[in-house]
Image (cartoon, rainbow, N blue to C red; front, top):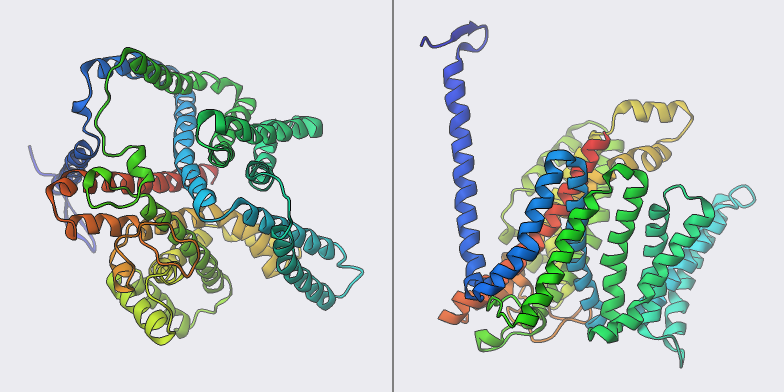
Length: 532
């Protein structure tokens, strides 16, 4: 067979055979990397979960109740109705991921932030927002300076007085009721409006009320299930009610995708039936190290009693702090550089340095945090605030770059149309550019947070403790994190039980969190690309 070559001006001889070989080499390299990573993850998961230690009857029961029906239903839907298949898989995935984040939120309300404190600040925020909106509607009666000063004074007054007054009351509602109103209320408002799907005001009001009552059911279901009213209410508000509202609203908008609920019912029902069956038949499950005791216990000198609970709580607080610091700064910098800054030497110099900072090793940011926050500012080492600020510096360039790319993806024709209608630059950015770019900005931020949650070197450099036996309760408290705990088990407690059990279990938990965060980013990206 003759080699197909041709002469192209500026490129020299171009061979299609060489291009084909290069393409297959790239494919082989990609497959090799995927296979090698899969084998590594299988080994780690096998050490952590130990599926082969379960009774054969346990495997057979779940195969008959869960695996086989799921394969049959999913295979049928995938061949006959792919959109319904994706919808059903999305419902199950949403419930799984939101349940994990709901467990983290429940941890915060149980051990870190008392529900009355949360309720008081939510109430203060609501009053502050109502006052600002009310003053904004008086734009024709009052001058701008009066409205600005009045809004600022009202916000300061609301946050300065309301939390203290609420927390000083001698009697207030139960924790479940306060969480239902402060957390379940906003969730019910969003879920009810989506689930109603153009049902009119009365239908929307009914849907919101049903969602709120469903969240409030945690006050009763929690004690019955022996998990407590607070965790049950939080799980209903964060996981169950939003997933159910998404399923109902999606079916109302796309009735033809109703068969997808059969896949979700098969998976959830099969798992429940299998669990009941193995319990009734007395089959022993895997001797997994990733169990309830591991997730709810603190560190111990023995691997069998060691847990990841304080490290999980520390990672959650660190990510909240990182998001609160990096998101507004990164998005604000991106908006200025992309929409306001002139194209001159200074902005080009800033662009180059932001790109370079995104590739700086994480240990350098740890040294920067140690030098600036600890040595220069004299802050205590290893606290939630210092750790969050250091990790925020680490991902800030990534947030800026991803936000700028999202802003650039907004067509200039939309900006020009807004200017043509008489809008100012700020009104165009607020009402046209940012809403269009927000999914892309959020996707980049979540991926950046996924990098931050797995970092160890910056926390070591700022003096964060490897092991803690209790959750941090304030920004000034010492904090550990999941990577630090795994590092301690692998180095400071270098023994065979920790190597073969605790370390793989910690890695599996950390990977599950990372994959869940990345899955949210992937879903947002795909939806954003579909809407373009």
